[in-house]
Length: 50
Image (cartoon, rainbow, N blue to C red; front, side, top):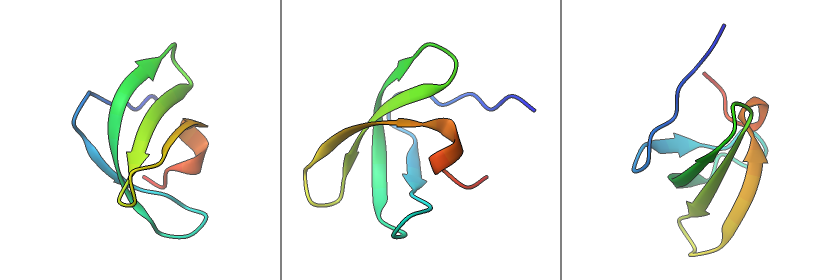
């Protein structure tokens, strides 16, 4: 199953249920996000529940 994340999509992280916004899609498995506290991360798609 393939999921496409676009810049500006709002997501919730699996680990701690933090809300975040997608800043950049890197390849087909990673995204750069900014969480609600202003921190930026590069994470795998598997860290975002569907």
